[in-house]
Image (cartoon, rainbow, N blue to C red):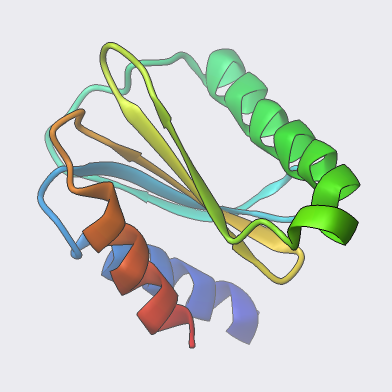
Length: 119
């Protein structure tokens, strides 16, 4: 219970990093959303089933990236830019921190802040 409260608090803190962040979630290694927070006053772009599918996709990409760890080193974070959103994935132990941002976001700055807060 204590860990869950910490993760919920972290999601709120991550959301406060930048006004361009729409959603923050912490995904466990089995694909379950452990905690999340969403920017107040926005309408989600995806339905609940679509959101679960995006989370599975992030998990699958993370597992696929491990194939190259031996030669390239482990993945620390990744960004996917789409027409309407940026998806930022920060690898943290066995968990993934997922952030959805507006396209204009400074993802390098956001990633740097998330990594600082996770240390």
